Length: 248
Image 1 (cartoon, rainbow, N blue to C red):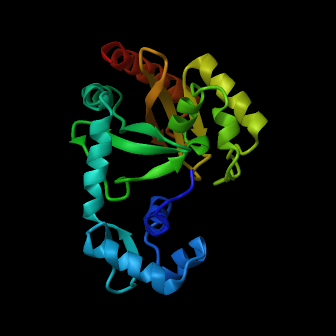
Image 2: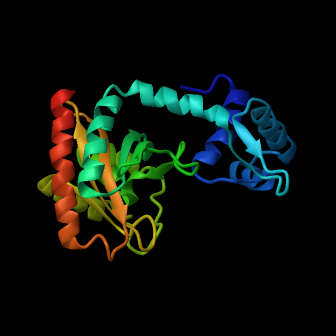
Image 3: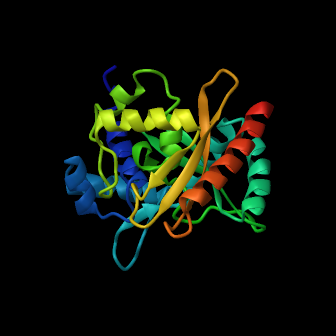
């Protein structure tokens, strides 16, 4: 369907840049989107006035503002399993003494919906608010991809599949094999595929009809997340994911 309000799309394209990187400047966004600098500046200033963006007085660069949080909360309210999962995450976090991440699928990305750390309860750091990552380089993303409908992977590869480290899986056949292994064992591992020296383990959360609604994950250094530790954490997360699914 053709875009009817092109000016609105242009503005949203500018705002969407901050889902991938922040802070960003006028020139960087202009070059990325192929838009006139003065046009980009006007759009950015409008978002600043609406509190959707903040501008650093020293650098002049922009980043997401507090106004965007209301959309973040709305996304959280949309997922009926959110509050259910939260209670189980608190218990799991204290039991394994690890920070637990709850993510949901957002097209080709994962969206960090909630973060729980041991004994201290929930938190969302500034960097985690509205944070997203590509599915193919994260444990929770791959855990969800493994149970996506047939054809999802083909559509995923219609756009560039970026390598973030030397371990990133960017070949469709290799990724398809990885997803097969994930389905067989019930959990996914990010073997330093998104960030150097960070490993993650994730498990999917599915509705009663088998549809993936989210994923739980835990991250840490390679020294901390040994194969033995990963297996232990994966089994624990699968236990709690099953309990969440039973209540959904």
